[in-house]
Every structure is written in C-alpha cells, then in structure tokens.
Image (cartoon, rainbow over all chains, first blue to last red; front, side):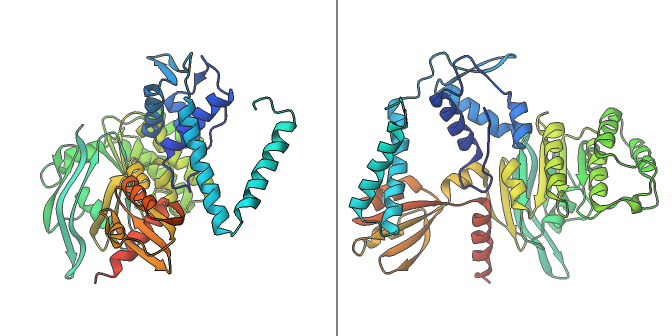
Length: 131
Length: 298
C-alpha cells in the first residue's frame, strides 16, 4: 500500500490518511490481518507529524477498522466493517459536487444523465465484476 | 498536559515602535508549533525574548516551567536553538566549534553528532566561513540537537534551502525530537513546511497574535462557501454566527466561514439555490486572508 499526502489540500492530513486506509480496506489492497506501518515509520516516510499519524490510527481503531496490539503494531481488523451507509454518504457527496460543477459549466441535465449512464455502461461491460 | 512555552502579555518596543504587542500564547509539551508571520511581524524578537537574548518591556515568558527573567541558565541547558542568521564563529573549523560547544553541556550526544556529520558530509577541517549556506544550517541544527534538548527552537530553519535540503531537515527534526516526545517551536514564512509537520500554529502580524489554533481545526473550520441562490436569500442566513464576510455578484455569493460550518451549510441548503459548494482553504489561503485583513484596521 502506497500512502500519499496532498499538502496543498485544505483537507487535514489525518483525514487524508484515514480516507486512504479506508479505501485500501474497501478495495482489498489492505486485507484483514495486514500489518500497517508503525506511527514512527509512516511519519518519517511521509515527513509528517507523528501525532497526526497517531490520530488517524486512533480514529480508525475507534471505528473498528484496525486493531493495535501494544508493542507489536497495528493491523487491519479481522472483520473490518466499512458500513454501506458511510460509503453511500461519500458517494452522495461526490455526486453533489458533480451536479454543482455541471451546473456551473452550463451542462444541461439530460446531457449529464446520458454521460453518467454511458460511462457506467462502458465500465461494467468491460469485465467489471462488482456490478 | 503541561505547556513547554507560555507567553503572557509580552510587549517590546524599539524606538517607540511596537515589535511585540501584548502577545500571549501557549505551546503544549510534545507538540510541533508553527510560529507564522510575514517578514517583520515580530517572530525573531519574540524568540530572542524567549531565550533571554533581549529583555521584554513587560509581560512574562515561561519555558519548560522556568521564567526567562529568573532561570535563564536552566532554560539554556534544556533548550536547543537554531538562529535565523548564522551566528557561528566563522574563523573556527567545523571540528573546533563542535568541540567548543561540547564543553558547555553534560548531556552532549557524540553519537548523534557523528551520525549527522556523516549524513550531511560536513567537511570537519574547513572553516565555517567557507561553508555554504545549507551546510551552515545543517551544522547549526547538529549543534542545537546535540545537547538532547527538551525544547528545540528554530528561527526560519529552512529558509534559503533547496527542497531536498528542506525535507531532510524536517525529517531529522521529526526523527530526533518529535518521535521522542519533545517539543519543537519553529518560526517560518514557508507555510508548506508548517503544513507538513505542525500540530498547532499561531499567526502574528505587527507584533500581535491574529490566530492560534490546532492546524487540523483551522483547516476543518475555515472554508469558503460558494452558493448561487434562485432568489434573494433571507438576510438572516448571511449573518449567522461563524460567517465572517461575503462577496456578492447578483445571486452568486462567496461566503467566508470561520466557525459552525455544518450549521451554516444546513441553513443555506434550506434556501432555494442552484448550486452550493464548499471551497477548501489551505494554510496559505488562510494566512493571506488573515494577514491581508489585518492591514485594513490601521
């Protein structure tokens, strides 16, 4: 798993890290039982504050996505539950952004609908097995 | 959790001009604190007061539980300092200044010095005045870290360095100071560096504190909202607490928010609108807004 921080972004670093780890779990890049880098390792690798990494891990632990064993390390939980509701909430947010952007660019509604459905068609016909 | 630095009502004027104006701030132990301000804002003056290099006109400065007025020697034993402008004796060789400094400290860490001399490939038998700017900064950092300080104070540690050098210095500060739970106080106008490593930041301008906050809070709270209403909005929603100001072009508004983002969004969503989106603000946006606004009050 590669971690990447966009330092120019207005999104706090700890939030960016949480999102990446969640995406890693949801996409299967991180599997149950996988060991995450230690706070120290990740902080030095990304050149970010160790307190920031620790905050991300604590939050993920609270959500039951990772487990920390003292002196051993942090691991992806055995049954990480990325709830459907949380995923949907994120997709809703991105859809809102898309719709706003389309409005600002003057793309009419029926064209946007056509574009979305043709994109979906394309992706899932190309052997996508997650539909 | 106790504070590594506590400044209360600091004032300092030079020839009647206030360099530091009623400045109070706190830095939590074990954190990395970014002290931000444009050139001439009073950052270096504040740091010099903290180190007892100049005396304040009024107010108190407390470092690691010691008052700078009474216990400056105790403070100096526990604090490492990298000055903005190099203050090293140019006629000394690198090896000589390392030996010279070692004499002042009981807890001098020779292995750390050796490690970073090798890492930076410092020429031990060259005179300091012959070193490049980057090498002088590297040497200053080694000298400041060698006494295993509980608090490391850095005045513009990365200015004038190339990006690779800057990143190296930040990484070393993290590795030697932060992961060991010690405190870093660092002044800079290079916001990208602060954005990477700081827990909390203070922004000063003309000697006065404009903002002190956890960096994550600052980024989570300070946003701009761009909204296009379908008709004149209810004037009440534009004066909700947390809205600092807004600009308007017909029914399109850009609203600056510094608090209560979610409540404000909920209210705005209830107004008939064509579009509503939140523009993220990075530290540079926030800095320029705060310092820019400050000029208008003269």
